[in-house]
Length: 160
Length: 121
Image (cartoon, rainbow over the protein chains, first blue to last red):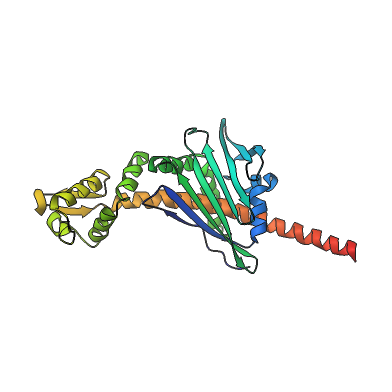
């Protein structure tokens, strides 16, 4: 198996954008399916240790989605609209219901690298720098510590 | 606390002149007068930029006026880097789960295409 590079992240200093890139041993079509088939999406969106339940998920241009993650007694809801779903691009809005006034515009590109490999480009544009920073915080609140503990354990065990 | 520190940092770094000031200060402390020299602007204008950087916790100033020394606060940059790194690790953990889903998809597709071949042959 080809050695994968870890995800890279950049926070644009001029506009409230966060960009993430990651290579996968998969075709663009497979990545598209993993993002648009709710049965597959629910398996990886995570975080680890949280149950993710799909409320609705209609991944086509003009469709919408909502999913809920349970953390102990707390539930975190996320919803948005699919602005565009095509073979190599998904454009969608994304709201964390803990901050219901905030909305991010997310664009995902699947860049075909050949040999069954694809680079995922993800860009999240928030409505303000404050919104972006709140977004960074919210991501961390949602059970992320459990995720790190699990990852750290894997690293310690030499599994990754 | 960390939450309130981040926004002014990103806002302060949104300006190209301030980013340039930060880049030069990363090489070492400098006076306001020295920092103003390469620019076609007044010491007062540079001083205004430095004030924004100071309020964001990115620099400290010691001494009076244009001879005051400006010092970059590395710990504030560490804070930003730390937040981004934690966010990155969260994304990486998510994408490792996606790796597993994609790998399982491969097997399923191979199995189904094989059975299709068996049926058609």
